[in-house]
Length: 137
Image (cartoon, rainbow, N blue to C red):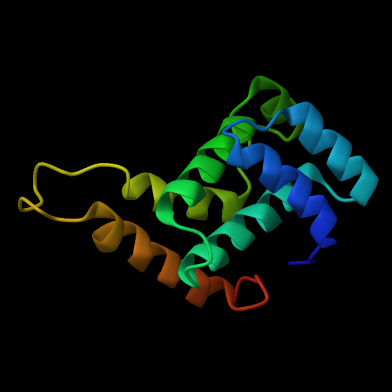
């Protein structure tokens, strides 16, 4: 994954931390960075996953960011511009945090869904994508 300057990702991260990222902002940032919007969302998602794994951000913050990023990915405008495709890194990281949001009836009482589902999924994701954010072949 080609890491864009931190200011670019910071703009998206700041908006996502507030729970809402507009596709207009993503498109503007993508034009300024000369990068496709899906690549920027994947880069932001990788950053969130790696920061969570290293305890730089907590579950709640990461979950808010990924829910905001996901809302962009499933917006009609994004889907129209990007052939109804969710960026793969964004999808993997979002699903990991989504899995930690709720207790399942099949889990024993007291099970921590974050510990049982999100942590291992993020660890697997980082193993698959490596430290540079590139999918291992």
